[in-house]
Image 1 (cartoon, rainbow, N blue to C red):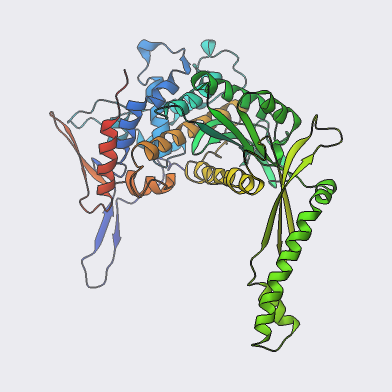
Image 2: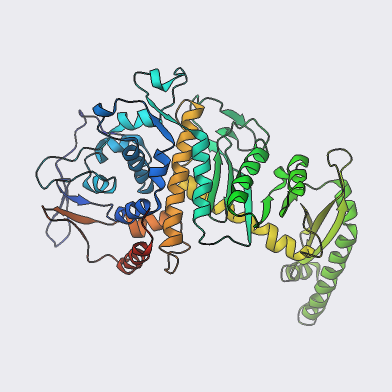
Length: 495
């Protein structure tokens, strides 16, 4: 919450220390920053042109001779704020005077006493707010900045395609959905019993750690609602750039739908592997695997029990304790399966039967990959199971970039907020991919990178010849900073 002018903030804070001089803390440091690592982000953004290309997706109907902050500057300020952990627009009421942010967005800095002035919360709100009672931004008095949703969606895919120096042989597209809880009366927010709250249910498509789609949806729709149109759009854009790439579409049981599977089967070099909910017919078809897994587990258990009975008194309690030491028996099997009505054809289903001391656990996946291409065990473990990595991407988005802060009233405004956090994630992932690939932060989360590499204390000295940012010499990650700078300097400038 932004302090009001009437709030009383002490000029200094005094901490008593035993046998030492008192420590006094105040907020009178003039040209001091805690965000010195933002220099890396700003340079990377300049070379990849991410926020500037996002700005090109907006139409500015303001009178250009009367504006102080361009759309490009506003977007860069908003995205950089999200990167540095300032997810609330109210934070920019103070950040508007921060020299580090002014340097990052390209504002001129003077060596005099005149304070830096960036956009405040009201100006940024006009960029982000999408009032439902304004049909034409060109005729509006206060909200004269309009965004093109289709252009933003295309930009996310374009940035992904440009991240490769040459076309890959195969890519995997992961479809998944998460929840964005809301705490007000947001437009198109509904109670979802699965997530146990009022929320949105945005649809995501990832390729590894690359974000391609972030589509906000109401939470009262089918989990696969809109998945096929988004998949078709993304694959079309990919095919225009990489005509021969093999594409594997992956998702949980929510996406094992006839329309999605049939479309993939109609395409060249587009396969799928989806989770499949179990039913009595599938369990019946996998009975032979269940029997073999049970027999194998019983034999292993009996062998170990007989050994321990030579050392201890035989008892049922001993058998239970020994059972916890026995490895589970896992069997995979390919099945030929077709539903009674919903599927148009027979499809390959792979069953995984896992038998342990707690009983049997059977899971299924459906795929268009043949047994000759991928055996059942490798299909389940190497093709399907890695889709769980998407959950880590969700954690980065929601916990560290606050993508679930969809708290504005209108649905369109919340979608725009989601796109801002998506571009923020794309920019941070580019830093990880292009500059940190050979450092110990190569697999670090966005929050770890922010804490160790971007949130650096420094003194800023402005003179007529240069702007000096002096980071503390006690910084433990100066070697990683130097490595990131070396890789960054090798990136080609635009044009």
